[in-house]
Image (tube, rainbow, N blue to C red; front, side):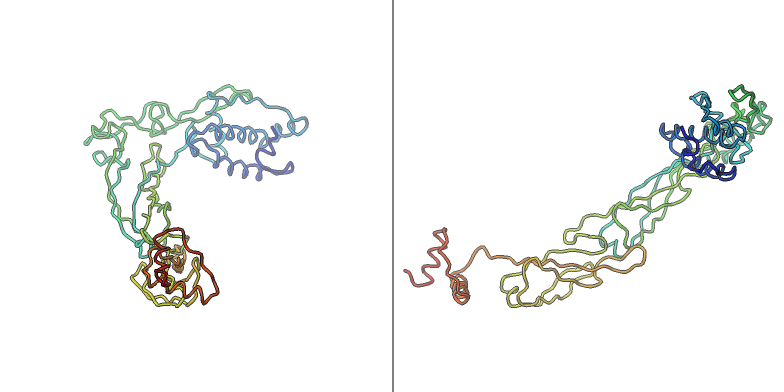
Length: 364
């Protein structure tokens, strides 16, 4: 393993560069940040090994001289020393094998109509999360009583330990095993929260959905999630927005697409017709000779952009409908049109239609 490559620094990097690289990577791959991921934990071990060697001038000279392999024994039992390295590098007063991670993030779902993407919308939601216990105010002690000072750590929340490592005897400061780092012991726990200082609550929240939001996007509400059990900040609440499919319009980014069926006569001669928009009906001119599949646009009749509110267009795809049931008069007119175009039409296979054509031209 190349320690310089692990930290992403050059071989002439100074102590400040090495520490900066370690702090950046340690934040990224800390097991608590990654939910205890095995891959992140292994990467965190490698980063810690590299930092221990390259941040110590003596070990670094030995490594540079011959690429000495340092066996740190960072197994499951040795994870505490890895976190000690982390705490020392970040200047944390308290050591220990855990970092004060944020509380759990939560997700809620809200459903809106396409019309509300145009105007924006409001929703009031109810959600449950872990919050400070109201009965004890978060102390964990029953009302009328108070937590006592932890006798193990004297209220400091930390105890000093000495352990023998391959690098020699190391003195480390770890979280007090009896009080969990709070510095307090609870003799008469709160009956509402069982002494934890936190309890589930139901809360209402007003959700303002901005115009232009897309299906699947979420709104973030910082520190509206669960309380951290380790004294860190609360988690976040994410409200995911779902936009219902529309019977008429199909969304493509900020543009709205619809199909418009017109007759052969309208396509050939042109017309002015009424088409729907999200804001009501409007008139649309059909130019003579329009072809099936051509697209017309209503500028600014689409949806607003979430960032700048500029609206897209409404795109109308024209479909010329071929009639399936013709009257005798229509058949005669179409044959006259075909004759004008120099076309000689063969009689259709359908005997019913054939009889109509024959009769239209005086064939009995």
